[in-house]
Length: 403
Image (cartoon, rainbow, N blue to C red; front, side, top):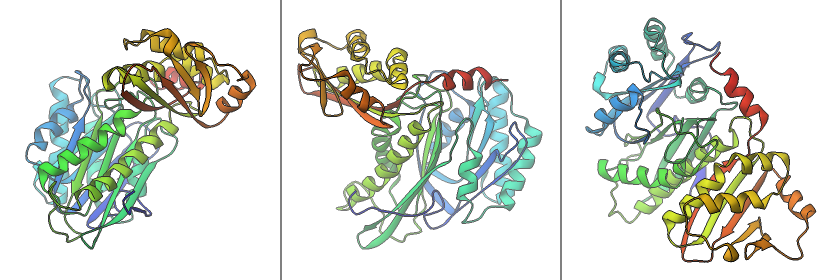
């Protein structure tokens, strides 16, 4: 990890950040309004959902990201503020204005995020009071409360932080995330907020975040559904006192590695907390004609309900895996496909491998964490994705969530 040391905390682990949360009463009998504040304006980078249907906050954040400046992030759970017409943008802007006024900062430095049920207008009376109250509880110890307040169907909060030396200066990167269902690579129904006290050139910060997201949040899948609210924001406020970093700095890779580590850990926490999941599975495909075709195959396997339910049931049904590869759209020659469960080859040349027993495979599938490796033996293309199994609990959660 290029010298990264894991430290306690999340978004308030880096210097110059406060956070807090309150119960605004939006939907849940728990805290549902969170806020993150940098003690001074920071540089900001962001990535967003690729769904053509997008929540109001995504549209507002995209617009404000142009300035590359931010000082606060306000987040509500319980209501996505998506698909409610012009009222959605109006309410998102009002949230920023209320926060700006309460914090005594420029409202354009406030980014807004929402998560929850689609198609329901924000209860602005509760939102306004929640924002005002959240300002009052901001503290350097408020990261834990904020991480819990953004949860929806999550069962645990998701936080991670590291410290690394860059040109002799200690720099910290911390983050928090939410997400458990409607998770698919290329962003999902997840929100993630990452902070650093490093001083970073704006364009370089965006490049760093985009690369980190490509190897973390864009490589997870719980159920194959992309959300319309997915957002990752990274703030850099410079409180570490380092010389401004850019891509030409000899230590640039060290900083980016720290961001990568935090993003990857948060992404994996989302998969491990997948709705109703019991197993964490890494799917890798190698030997494809291209990386793009390898990606097609990994996604087909990771999103197959037949595959995912077999994992839950403890059935090492490799037939479902090779079937998914076959319809993925990737070029495949049946008698050249090899499939391994961890390091145990189950399929050789498109057929059951000799010398392997079902019981041996069942022992692997029974583990909480395992890897499925597929080699198409056609080229150098490769890809991987983190995913999970699918249980009846997933159906139960999503059948009841809207009620």
